[in-house]
Length: 174
Image (cartoon, rainbow, N blue to C red):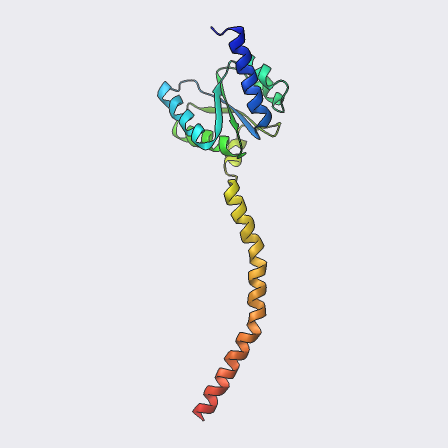
């Protein structure tokens, strides 16, 4: 049994994380073994995801004054909360990948920047590129026109050199 002070600490900790997190996911974990939960926690920690099993009454209080207050009505049954700390898709990736291996973890709610999404949105959210992938894609898009311009500017010179070489070979052959 938790004391009032312990409950206050849990509520303030979850509220602090929720206020800074870009995404939140609530998932049902009925039937997961302790070993499964330990593995899920390790994967979450490695990905920079805050994962916490919290009583629904405490979770509702913690989320009340945050952008994730929209999730309060769906907090029913044994749920774990996963918050992405930096990468918006990190929590979705961890939950999706783990639920592929273990069908007992069921996504109930997904929220992105305070907007409640359908539970199936976890798949599309998990497919978002990471920060580094997004930067490399942006750089490739920005580099393409410059590369094409350089090739276009070099084309007349290349054509001139080929023409002069062809004339030279023609005169030598004659």
